[in-house]
Length: 435
Image (cartoon, rainbow, N blue to C red; front, side, top):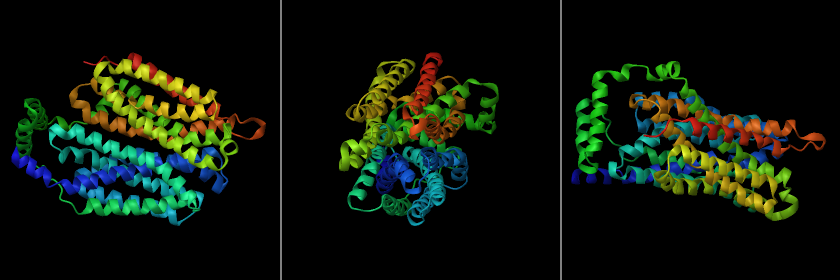
């Protein structure tokens, strides 16, 4: 056990690099809500086109998640992290240095490609550099840091504007962040790769010392699966062709990620076009608008903390129905009140949708045998491409119902969010009971 602790202490520099990477990709990913209205104004494009520019980030996620996984299998987590960080750096630098709607769109896609690789490598790396007994704590800590990045990004846009600088300077800051991230992940010591069954046995025994026989048993089951040759089967294809219920769960993830991102990216438009925040608050409107977007992500982070305790007390199916119903109520409050009510309601939406992803994921995993866990993960992660679809659809519906004043009807656009919530509610009704 002492040897294990000494080994983990050797990864302190890598732990710090991982923490900075979580902070960086949280900021780069979730700044979109603050810049989409500015893209519309800067390039004189429609709301749906500006939303689509941001959506290219998630298109990249849907296209490259599996290829990055294959790349990591053939190379290493370090190579994957360094390569994806370099691509991220190139993307944010291109966004900052080359203005224009279409150059920005390509740069956003490139950012998405890079950040996807960063995420694909980071999550399993956290498991490798953590003691099994501390893995959950460490992952939670990194997600808090990621949430801090999400919260800070819109505030950074406000800070840059108050200095009299163009909003695109945000991406010069991101270039510095991405470059530091690249350097940070390039130099620390990484865990040695496990290459054979003896290594797996050793890791099982070491894990049992720290967290009991259950961990060792899990490792032994993993080893047995390999010996039995079960990994040679294409379980993803088998699942997709023989168990159509997986499509229902995948659609749930698709709609959840889509509506999470879509609402975040609509907040700025809604405050500007529907509630006329610029006329009401004047010079304070910019800060209030970006703070509303930041608070949406802060609400989501707080909801995950509280949700951890809630899910220990009530079944996931019930939690989905309660939380998604409250999210819909909060959205209704945002749409039916004044600016002050909306500024409180949007963060509440983030709070109440916070448990959807892990709960849907858990219910999906519970619906199939343990041997399908990796296949389910790949399918559901691919469904994250929903983040590229729902936001532009909301903007398109708003524009299609804008009337004679040529101002998008965001109340109509947000009806798409209600439809997504309704599906997730129904999924919570018919999902398999947890064991």
